[in-house]
Image 1: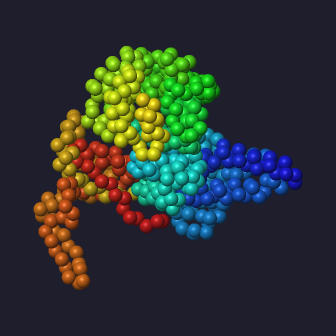
Image 2 (image 1 turned 60 degrees about the horizontal axis):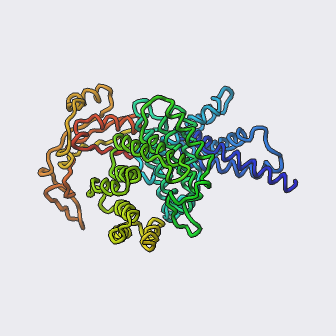
Length: 409
Length: 114
């Protein structure tokens, strides 16, 4: 066998695994109720493929080959267990493998949704939801997830184990929620995806943000009628379009008005606008993700920072505040007012905010410092920057940006 | 799946509770849950001032007055539910009169595997 042919087989395996992994694992979980068994059997099937395919050539349907291998492996393991439960699990697998078994692809999209909703069940801890979604839906390794959340691999492994145990011990159902729960549970799923995105987006190494983008695309594929899923996807694509310009060569944050807009990813921006148009065309009133995406779209559409449609942005923040009252959104609205009506007006808007609710939040003094700097009130600006620096996350890019501003005064 | 549902009173939450027209009375809640055969048993418990805590240390039975833990929240009742899954138990708990102003804790029974 030539090296080229070998490489081609390896690439084929990689691509079939990327396309099929989630659905295959999800369907094995449905059939057996055993999360570890499902992941192990899929892994085992991939290893078998790596041994057989280079010699025997690619099977006609690599996906069916992998499914059959994973299910046969599951049957072997279950036969050895010799319990009543294992017998039921075997029967469930065999029923689906036999002639007249359900069509695979349809089942897979249902199974992937079941998996997503179960991973994001509100009875699981939020850390557990995030970790389990990354592990089973996106297929990150425990070590990769541990690194992303700065915990040790054994600690992450424990977290995953506890989460899977709770699903089984508390009988969290493996299903797409029924209609009366669907809206509430869907917004729970969106919250987990956005949390994963933000966890990654704040960092120079934005591995998790890339996974969140993938997850958001998958969710839109699986729930095409869900406006807020499109809203979230649009929001994530607009933000990701700026990823190459958000940090400079030293890993320091570059504020949006200083970013080189020619380097923003036009394809991602186009995807964002397209998803937004689809969401708007539903005719339903916008939810919080769509409104945030529309704000991001205003920035994406501006050819230069000075050309930003601040008036529209303020209106969108008003709608967002009505849909989802929050002191942080009110702060962002006040900042937008400052760019629409002038920095004095911005300072006045900041003064009307609920200072108690924002106490300890560095972006309030940082916003004040920014307006004072633009107005040339250096002394007051310096004091505000010092207050912001005091509250900013230590050693993080946000803190270094404030430090730079202070030095530049 | 069997769940123990603890009915918990929380004075802080009770102060903030806003009664709603959808709230069931305990009689309505019992009629619904018993009517669907979802409740095995349940009862109200006397206040913690009537509680007795027992433990054994070096062969000595130690008996103290009061609950095992000092807390502003206390268990005022329990129900044992038989549900298809956690979502069903959550829906039943959410309709309990104490859900608004108090809280419910759902604990699955320790059933052996298989």
